Amino acid sequence: MQNKVLRIIIIVMLVSVVLALLLTSIIPIL
Image (cartoon, helix red, strand yellow):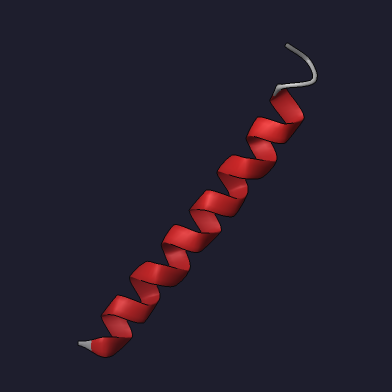
């Protein structure tokens, strides 16, 4: 059960980092 929670947390962190990079790369264009 703990492994699944850790995996979810890692996925969420990766997704948030990717979204942050996308936002920082898109905002200057706008």
